[in-house]
Image (cartoon, rainbow, N blue to C red; front, top):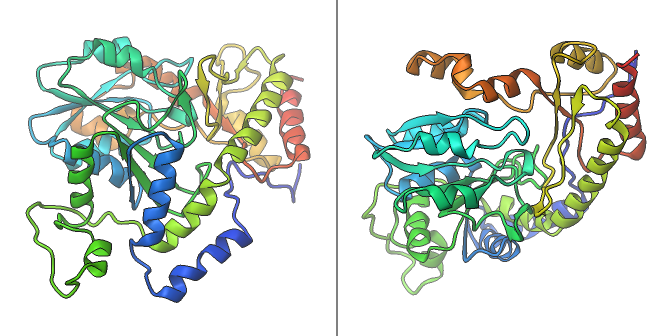
Length: 383
């Protein structure tokens, strides 16, 4: 037993620079969306090689904003992976549309493109491929075979800094949505980002993000007549990020590439050290892209493992090592199971990933000794 050692599944890295960044908005009094958010958006867009970036309160609201901007509503269908965080499916219901699940490939945890294409109908308006755990989905295979009118919205919650065939995540589809939750590589507490290369979509999304106002609060306050309220011609939402978050986000974004590089080295060390465990499949670095390594998610072979996945997690927890399932199969969650009459076996890839995936600690506050301790305990399960 290790009574005092605790290695978290994920921890954010913040410090004096983030503290200092809060000074300007606190002293200026501009706490809601303003110049710091604008600077964060501009820098994020440049880093991800997209024309437009709009900060939001979360990745979930960014996804909802994307679908609302695309005009998706009742009668429409949106294809989503069955193995993803529940919000990917929830946002479709927020719009009054129908989520249509597609299976995933257990080798990558990402959308099974062939299965997704089989589920396209005349009512399909969009597909939301998820770059799960930081590995980009096969967007080219999806785009090549989809009807032209079907939009692609990247769920890039885990994929800040990731790349696909030399292209950064964020500009691979019509929209992309990122998360800055503390479990992600960079954080603003809660927070998200919506990106696009389409100026018309960006303009509409910007209005919808701010209650449907014809001009933003920053533009109005800095304009010649700040005392006049804008017009509201759209039914919008309040999905604005605060300048406090934007200030922190700017600092964090400057550290993103170093964070990913350190995580990639740790991932390589994990793969090398654990390669002898034939019952534990580790994720690979893509040959033609950049994994963002938001998480290191393994797959426990139920036939060869010395213990069941949950028993392994319990054993590691007792040793002070946090683990988690990769995520959940949404079609197996109570709400979706009951509302749509779904069964676990409907999506066998997602079902198996739900039962056998296991994330082990990977973050930028871990030491070499921490990684060695995790490795030793996994190797020790073999005996």
